[in-house]
Length: 197
Image (cartoon, rainbow, N blue to C red; front, side, top):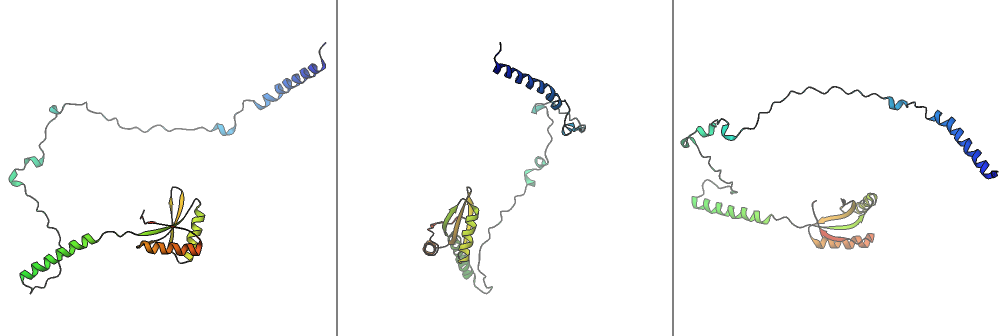
């Protein structure tokens, strides 16, 4: 006859099939949840006027309309005078002779030319103190340096927060500041060229 273990297994499988036949219809009764019963009403699309596009025609078949500029003759055309460039001229007294006026004007021209060539932007230097991954650390160090009367600021580049002190016009000043900060805060910095961006 059949072994007892096999009998128990068959009885267990039968009970499982019977309970599934009773429970599954209760769970899967076919009712939809209330959330899925939302009805969406779409309005009718607006009526746009139909645009009739003319078929393509060759250029030769199009009517030529004379432009008002072509109707004018060459005698009607007037040239616009070229404006004279402004000059930096010193104030000249009315009683000065004409040769003296020319001399003052030439001096003013050379002075303005010297001004233009001497307005080269000066290099500035800044001291990079530290680079942090966390913005909080950068803010704390900037506050600490500002409390010690240093012109400190931070910039963000590539998700890194860099702390700087400066800028200064002379590199030597930035190097002296680096030594001072190294002695005071034990932070070794790099003197680099200051960039506006």
